Length: 258
Image (cartoon, rainbow, N blue to C red; front, side, top):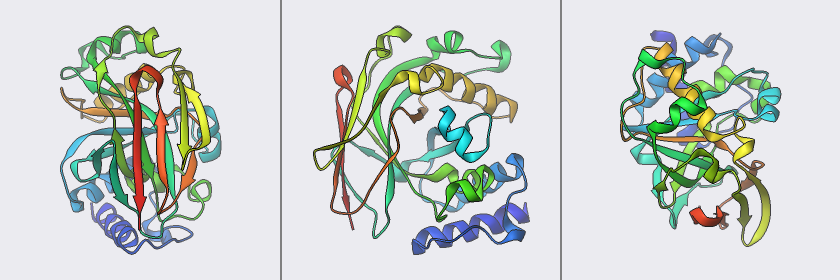
């Protein structure tokens, strides 16, 4: 695990310094997804807080084409990065990505007996649906140039997750009509909906459940899972206020500070 540990230490140092680089040193670049997830685990072990769930990235075709992948990837949500709507987040001088996302709370442990899960079969495991904003950042200037393994190692670009009030998940089709609008300082930046996330956010949840089980891990009851951006990604910086309006699910907001 020396490879993963050294990669993790370098990524942690870059994050603490808010330093932007072209990529990892060649000797520390993960050669494949397995090495990337090993480095991610090592980075999480060096980070503050404990894991309370997962984030999913590249859950739409545009993101997958940009990064040269054919499926999503995941990162880990830590207590130190989870905030309630209305919080103030310190981002220093960084320009951070803003991703409005549908999230779920997992109802109970998801076991391998029913693999592979589908959007339909995973639905009973979704206890609550949560409107949220994921804030993303990596030390890489060009995400497409470094590729998915380096992004995975950097905990899939996870910077912070801001959640609104949970609502009972209900029937899967209940969130389909919701039109999501995102704003920075009151100006519309992006809009979209559930269909942008692998056709439905439950498809993303099923993908994660299957992938974790294949890796010898699993989703546990009470885990949060944020399923990927449902609008266009946009960027914001210190001094701006960001909101995402999820219609009947409510509004999520975050103030960015230096």
